[in-house]
Length: 246
Image 1: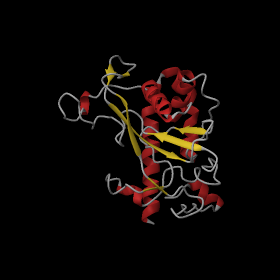
Image 2: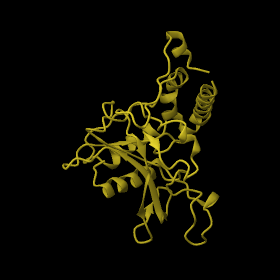
Image 3: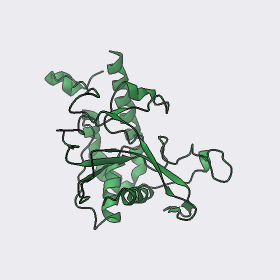
Image 4: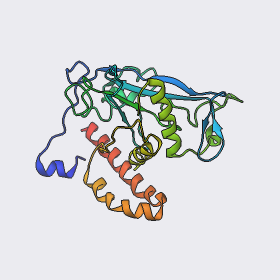
């Protein structure tokens, strides 16, 4: 099922840029780095610490000599760091769905696009607890070698951001969940963060309607966001699957 607004105005969904397009970042490969170990564990908001911690991330474009052209992008709660281009490792890592389409924000990132990779160095990292390469419940415990599973500690958006701060330090950069990460980043990085802006990945009517809940979420806590957010995510995934079948 296509977006009803698109159908109303007769707008067709844009075909993705192929990897050899001048506007595409082309074939991409995720990178992994260890940012916490037993000598330098990651402190958690819930108490205690975590080590080791590995992070999977992707970069597009080159960092300038002045190191002042970096853009850090946050993915959604169940998203990943594959923002643009075509994943050259999709078969190697068993992420076969990526063979059918580029990164989730490919329309915005690349040469001559909104986030022009000929001018900027764009970075996106999988958050702590992710199932896409960053340490999470499926990662092996250092003491047993077995997956953490339900013993993986509860992590917060603040924990996500502190890990991203370590990634920015590693790379030599100054710096529903995306919004929270952006706000938390401003608190964590008041000095090196030059500016921030929230640009949503997509604005389907259902998501726009749900924004009326934002004020209530702040007042009553995020638990009430779970049901509508989950329903919207499921509905959007169903629409994408139906479009692919067509």
